[in-house]
Length: 406
Image (cartoon, rainbow, N blue to C red):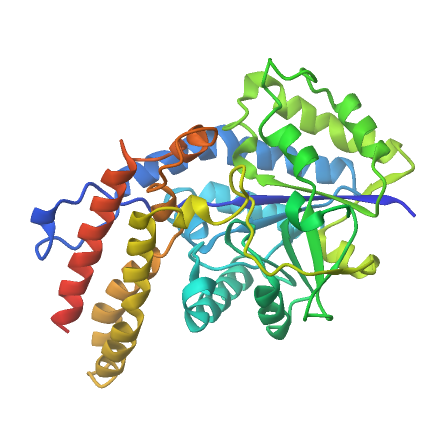
């Protein structure tokens, strides 16, 4: 049996907040920095999305056996529609090949599962409907925000009808086991668990251009030799899509590396490409994976400390979800108003509340400025995590004022 190379790329951009002071509370309700969001989207589109999508489309034409998968957040899809329709069209062309899978996730790239199962269900359903509308496909495999995962999530997602779920192959949950097989989650026997091979993924995503790395420069030929040496049924290579052109600039040779990789893989009789759904279909779970504590793919710890590691983050996210009950109560009142008013008044501030759930807002408040510091600075609009917290709480306070006026 051939070993499957399973590529999955995360595509996400948040709606970043504009500078918002205490003097704006109760006066200004435009929270998001349209100019900055558009500028960043066009920058990433030029450096990453458009050239990488063009390359991937060419590779699908050149190699019918080449398969990849994307998880694109709903807020990223919104920004494509608003700021970069050419990017959206390029993703649509990729999906139309039949060689590209779209995964399911929370629409707002949120931590909703940890705080509100009801809101989590709404966001996953909203994302599924958006994907169906834009790509004419229905996702079969689930990816939670930042690969956050435990047994409870797997059981919940299984009940939602998904065939597979993916997460990080963290050392502490693997122990002696290999990430290169399919597992079944404890308590969820009807869903398959795919684990990221973080070493081989990070060789591309983080180490590729590091001249101090003892394997530098990484050529496609060398990388395929590493893949060939792996014992297992699937090698899950999961990474941010911005790896191409943003994290690893064009002059590092990252595009040439990716262009050569499929042909070298397919020349090797031991290797092939599969999407996550195909891996789930073709590979039987070899054992149960019991993961009680929440894990993620972030930072050295691979836990939730990137978003919930300090008091600012914990306070901010708690306050966001404390508003849910009040928002639902306000919704019931709004539904009794004449037709049309609901759309004008309710949708705007509920949409604002949902966008405030995006995990990046809490990530910007992270104070772990050591080995992971550069990661937390990436596209961060703030000079400090304290500025991020103050801005966020000012916005949230204004949202409360608007709720009290309903």
